[in-house]
Image (cartoon, rainbow, N blue to C red; front, top):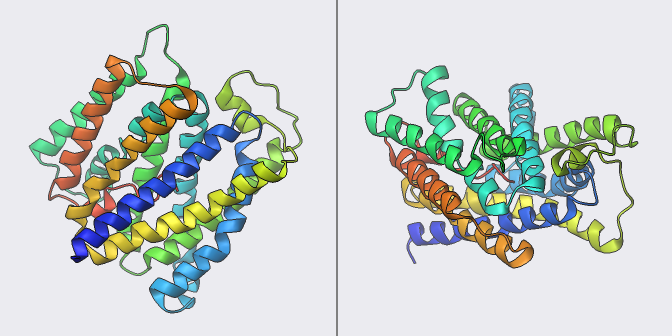
Length: 314
């Protein structure tokens, strides 16, 4: 089996694993707060991330380099992406949420042009414009069905894009495994901060599913739900290991398009668990965003490995 084939298998397996985390958190979003799930997820993932650093870097000292504050700051962008995505997922069908989040490559193209001075070709510029047109087809601003929560996955995509652009200069001196470790640590700190604000239930009682998922007080989970929250940590670490391994052994342009296999799982889980199925405008918007993302990923202006979404829903 060629390295490219192995890379594609590792990536698609990692994507399938990550989709289970989305399934779990959407299922729990009606009874527990996001910050509680994030605290437990990050605590469980911590030793796994240390193991990943040891495996890929051969030593743990890569997490204590002078660049650790920058890696922690980048983790804050990742936290914004993660929180916004899952708050949106609490209100929206899974397929639409994932599709909106996959505007990340479009934001990366724009951010790289603004902050890194990269040139954006005509094809990529048209793809970005088309991708945001696809967003409008899904969000339907001005219609009766419009929900402000639909903007949350787009905010998450922007946070992800900025985190990926920040990885470009950091990648010259820091390892991917070390950045993932500090990202997880930042998730833990931020989730604890949210718990300090909302964990007592002072601001609980919101009717909107996304706001309720944010402001609900901590709830003592039963054994099953506790195991599911803990499983998210294992899923995040295992999935990230598979995706990182994929990009280490195979050419990024060959494997990056398979990131969009996430859409298959999003549609499948949404249909099987909640009976959600995109309408005609939703399908059209999904198709436009995916096509635009694939064009941008394959564009030569920036490495495809930075335009994919290995950490977006981790």
